[in-house]
Length: 588
Image (cartoon, rainbow, N blue to C red; front, side):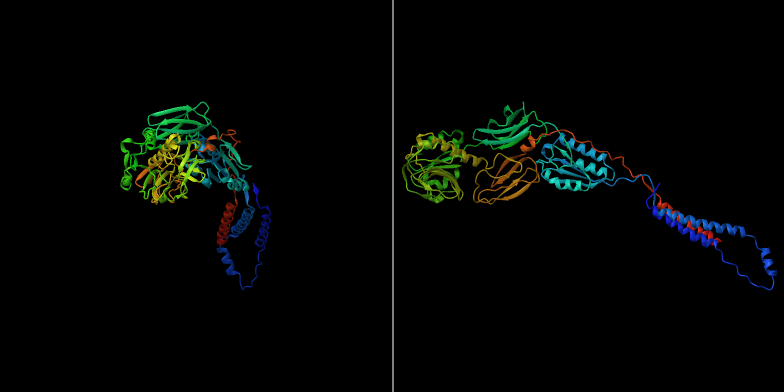
């Protein structure tokens, strides 16, 4: 037994005056009386209790002294056993990024459960889930059942891990003298933090891009950590395989379109990067109407359209008199107009114009070029991709100054000879090189230009959305939308995800909420188009653990508070003794 305040034992001296006062009796007064006869009779008839009275007096004194002793001992605070150590905060930070999916997160949860089992009962525990930000799953909780429930509810997210987000929590815990633990794959944490690394190999996709043509779907995919594996692409009933590598090109027939899926086999590690998907719209040839200015369609134009193959739906295509343009344009997906005069009016729609500069679209005519080479080509535009400027010699070309919203495609020294753009609902490709006044039709550049233009218009007609988007990137159209369109409806990938997104300057950009993968549907006008969202996180896929395991977890689970305090019992005993003395003294 130990006394916490032994210096208070001097209060026991208070018993001394009590004893002295008890022993000092008052002197008896002597009274003179006429006779002792009556007193003798009273004494003779009274019982003799002088011995009992003295015993009661001594008992009363003993009770008071014992009460004082109990009170003094209580004030000294006697204790036995050993007190528990002060509570020590425990911070457990679990990596909860995409690379922790599956067995890795289960292993991390097991480490956290072991840390909780080995902590002292009074230690408060905080659990952080570290993904793109640090999220609190439990805060200074001591109950094991509540901590277990928080760990069961924890899930990794489809995002990268930012361990710096937990830096403030680590610093605060260490400053309090607590224990900070990081559990994950190579966590980047401050000194003093115990690190438990979880291992396990991983192979996954780190790159995915899709290009859709009228007949094929071309895929560029990259894989990491997949030595000996293969990439498998499927679209409908078609399937193609290739050895996995950092850059793999796959090609599939487009067919009727549908869901394109690329996956790595055999899968390894987390599943988030084992596959990627894209929405391939069904191909439909364009209904092309050729405006006849008299004498039949231009033979060079007719030949170029004939060489376009499936891009032109022959059953729905045809020619019509140029003067019926206003009423016939709505019957075709694309109108081809080859004339010596620029059109005065153009109804809403898509046009391939082989005319002088159309001032109605904002072009400013420039002096005609008798003979000039094409000295610049917009190689990054779909219409002029692959066109060799050296093959084109402009004879009698009609250059122009294009409007600000148009993209120059072919440039002469004096101005633009071709441009593409959209204005007032008219989407156009204008070529100011007349087939009869240049070398363009007799080279391979002309049918290539026409074919590229048809592909561009066909892509617009099929779906303005890209086949796939990366998680975190905005959904935005690949082409300009009609100017009259004010908003679109975006749904997915979650069942409850729905938003009306405004359209400005023919485009929009919207990042769907949440971290889910899957189909995103966009209603544009009366048509609904789809794309697929994929979680491709190269940093998460390529991450490997430096080591597996961590330091030994200290065991404080056996620490208990065995200390017993006796002052409440002694104080109660002192009070009881005083009550007993009051009873004895009262009877006396």
